[in-house]
Image: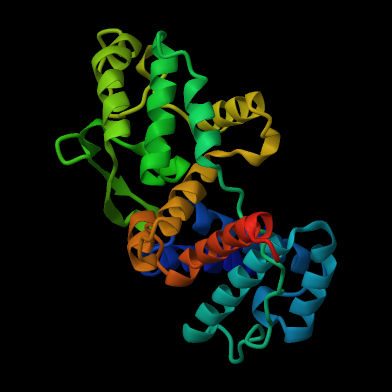
Length: 300
């Protein structure tokens, strides 16, 4: 390994360390940024160019090269990664001019998220066989996802002590290690109590676990397990690939908005750092209203 490449790798790692301390970004986001910058650095190595000697046109060439194989959202993340890196390089005086300052992200039409109807929800809830240990747990999972809008990562990381049944709320550790308290309703309470009294003890088999939802032999459930569960249930009601764990989060927020909840309150419940992220649900709600209007208004 050349000395120059080693120094550049050290700069990338130092930048990622600063991101972790200063930005409040999640570990997964920081790892994605790190991978983006390393990929860019590999591309530069093939051209025998140091990462500290890059010009604006070279960055543009790189994005023109990789954009053919990437989704717009992925490309925009890569642009963000490299812009943040060179902003930090400029701030720390590792370069004299920021070559990425005029690089812009791509605009793209935002596809509205799929939202379940109340009828579809009831059908999904009815599929797990609650007479079985696993089925009872799965019903409790579905009920809590819809009742609280948790991300799948938040759901599987939920600790036993994080569920405050008397307060009808969960303590959630979200992105960037930010904590929030999210309430849930009586239906979720009913199924969670049944899971805790019957299903969870059988799954633990006299063992203990810090985690709220557990699988075989009391092990923590994985994100992949939740995805597979929701996909399989969705396919049984004809939703195929439309239904994902995040669908429950979208449905939670949209149903709140449709029933008069304030957008700021929804932002807090979802744990969004920026209100603009939450505003997507106003578009979903408007789209639903347009469909209702088109279907029922005599002069639509």
